[in-house]
Image 1 (cartoon, rainbow, N blue to C red):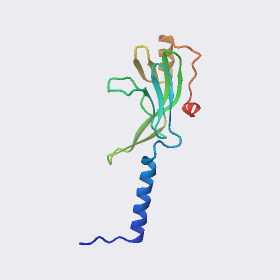
Image 2: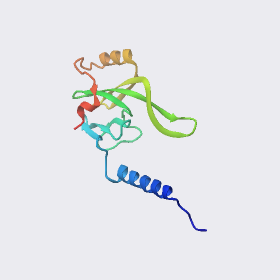
Image 3: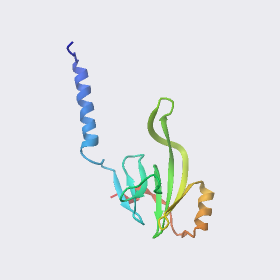
Image 4: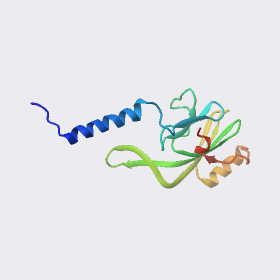
Length: 150
């Protein structure tokens, strides 16, 4: 049985193929970047919600990483501090696995790159207490991740 396409079907197919090729065929998006932090870790932005902290050479399930969406970061020669916006599934009941920011929900993380060991998720007061316990410099100030974009 022959297939029949309308002009509208063909235009939609052409647009879909073009967008998928542009989105994945020509490398990272214009705002994607990675930035060296400390201890071999980097800040990676792969899309607007996929901003994370991970080692340069890759990682395993046992490697401490700060998962998306990192929104603020600070570091010295040992510690990396991160503020992360919590993500949630767009529609958890349909099986849709795309994640979006959960408005107003944030947590904090401390990564000791000498050990390496990850502390978090922490709320604001727990973050301040853990910083003091680990002797993290009070001079480290979290800054928006886009301050480090090229």
